Length: 621
Image 1 (cartoon, rainbow, N blue to C red):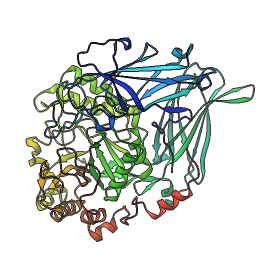
Image 2 (image 1 turned 90 degrees about the horizontal axis):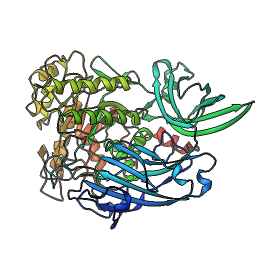
Image 3 (image 1 turned 135 degrees about the vertical axis):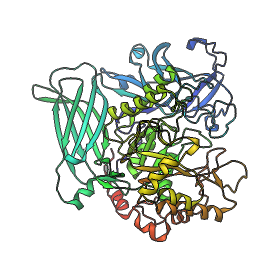
Image 4 (image 1 turned 45 degrees about the vertical axis):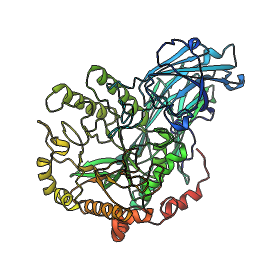
């Protein structure tokens, strides 16, 4: 197991400091303040929670378009002396941010879900005290920016939830060498038994530089390679020894039932007159696995793999879109214990710590871009920039097996009639394929396809027999694709043919039940706990019976989310029925034994092999 507590677990240095906790805070509803000197900080906030959340200590869900933050950090000169640089990292600030350090503007960023950093070194030359001030602007009524499920009305309505303003992911300080590894990406090439590594360097380059890449598991060292550095970009493939025996090969392959990670230590070296010096060292990890499509099937590691996913919106009652690391881990554990092998993270770019736990514990992920709700040139530009940054941030995570740039025509509402809307969908589809050719892309999940690798259908039919009629086999699916109009929308637009595309029922279910409240809604309703279990079982077993036709499914949803009461768990993650009962309801006693999920009710739902391997871990990366 790759053990890490770092906010960026695939590019981790030893010298970093968490800056979350108490910051000074102010609302600027009049948008009157322009510089830190203008601001009157009149309250405190607990970061990284947004001011709308109870966990922030503020809990104000009103309309606030501009907010300010401030914190003073004391640094010892030894922390950053000898040519080191001091960086302040922001996981995500919604929506645009400006950052000052000791009164000087050091960074500006646009995009509410993606990271950025500020180099504050020059502001520390005459001081060991660093005052960080952040101005975040997030117009609550702006529908042309990627906002996901954040409501533009004062109170949550229909399928939209409370807003998230300003800082909502970790803030942390890092001390780095002047010449350093600035970015690191991994690409598995299972067909050749290779791991691709791409390192981007930053800072002045000199003669005699080399990059050392060491790969290992908890049981063995896999490789120890060195590459000469002649430019700021180093791209190589690490060739692993292929034993050629399936059982042994499978020990190194990553999958939900066997989430084997490969640890990595990457060093930037300088060699002068035979003397070797380590300039920079980072810890990372990767995995050996492949994702592909063939004969209307999703393939994992070259073999057909049926996707059993759950819709995960990533909201918590106290933190809203922000969660503790334990909360992120528990969501992955609960998802696996419920019998799912994947999650469709819906309308949210989640904290990388959640992706880390999906990598470590073994959960497939469809990553989806938060939607804008208005089409114009500005929204198109914003989507392109932020989606590019999202892929850059996350493409090395082995858990991610599909990209979803659009959902249900949100932000492109006139796809059937407006060529510009169709061109934007095609543009992001092909951009995604260019940035990452190793994963399938779902062009516009739900309906109105103009291009896609997988056809995802949103069908909330509550009669299990009708679902079986529609999806039991390829003939039934072919007929359904021609006749279905979910949400009153055609499945395909002119010029798109289904051909051999795999079909996934990527939204279904949505049974509302709550013993706490009769308010709220779902796509159908159960009157009591037993009725809920019965309805859930009937739907899930119907879809399990359709696995000859479908490539997979995604049940709506993991947890209740504010006014939506259609979760398998309450919003506080309490199961609506015993977890083992929910597992058996989904697959039946006999079918459960045929899945790759361990049905035993241990605390995490891991296989025996996985638990034994965890006991052997001695290395902390």
